Amino acid sequence: KRNRVKFGLAVVDADTVKNFTKKRIRIDFWKILATEFFNNNLIETCVKTGKEVFVSSGFASTEDIKKLLSKFNSVKIIHTALSDKIEDSNILAIEKLKNKLKKNISFGLHCKTDEIISSTIALRPENIFFYIKDQKKRNYPDNSHAIKINLLNNKVRSWKKIETCLGSGEKVRKQIPKWIYNKLGIKKRLGFN
Image 1 (cartoon, helix red, strand yellow):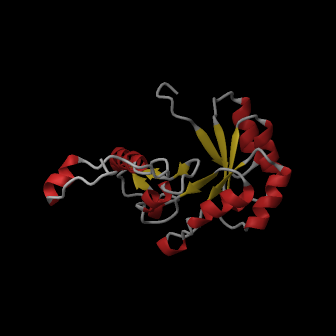
Image 2: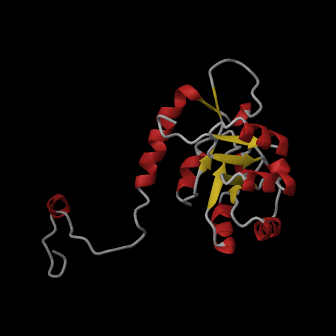
């Protein structure tokens, strides 16, 4: 909290949500795992807390997502493919879901190749969810696609730098830099100065 980092829990049952709410632990958001996408009781329990609710759409179709949003319009959708293969990631679904649902969409990484986040940045997901692990040789639940915590700072720095290349998307006429004329030996032409 001191570092302004949001804290959330991934949940699979309503009792966990109720227990944490009673303990008055300051939770900023709930993440509902893909296996519980159709668990209306859990989703409703999370929504009633007044916190942000993210639902992973791992196994769900676009139609399933539309039905969910017709019941719980405030929930936020995370696109993820529950496969560690890069070719199964289907990141273009982020853009298609945004257009069809008229909502921001987040991305959840389950691919072993975490560089996919660099590509995903161009699709401007609302948030990017990924797993981290320490350097110990343990078998974590999301081990194959978790990012080692000692690599995280460099990766986040790189992702932030990549984000700067997106620009506004507008093409505007700019002045041609002098170095281009000098390097190529081209004289200035009228209308291009």
